[in-house]
Image (tube, rainbow, N blue to C red):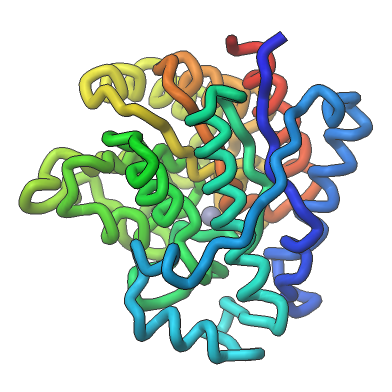
Length: 306
Ligand SMILES: [Zn+2]
């Protein structure tokens, strides 16, 4: 039986958003209860997150921005991006959870991990939070992975929105390959297919724009027929996945039509593309029952993949 790691802690619930806000605590509590009901909870290697430091986050974010977040208390960074009293702690543990996941891979205890964290991260730029995101969890995780010896990192982002922050942070870097599928045109308006990286990073950014209304067929094509070749050519030492489940047909926050079958196909495509460690990190997904079911499917595939 393959070992699949799972990162979760109630501390992630201490990031509070207003009652109307789609990025709610219920997203994670649903995931936990669905995994328990499905009898999967006890089959996972539970990994406790440690708390990352502000210096760790500085691998990606500017000192000025970190200082601002650390001193904020309660505030909003834009009309949709809230910082509550518990946010700093939650996000440092979210980042620290990814660190632990990477270390458990390094120690060969596990080779696939799912990090059920919040707040999400891929919209966060080096010097600004936006789109529900405070720190760019996956980007900080990628730099940490390099620090512990994984040289080439591939970030695969299937969230319905483009990960503008992740792309910008690594666009001049040829050691981190950023691959994204996203609804386009749509928020945040970045991620055109012509954006392929700059300078040394030219050719290490790959955007696939997807039209509103697309579904399983389109995603399965991209993840099973297109992605594996890119992975084989780049030969990453580790894959980090920005796992955004707002591509689900029931999601109120985007217009994709992916169902359980499509989710399974995406995850299979990713897992089948490399033998190297793969760490999934939760990004979007705003219809809690569909989010939780999609995470269950993801973990089912992870358990079956080795
Ligand atoms: Zn999203």
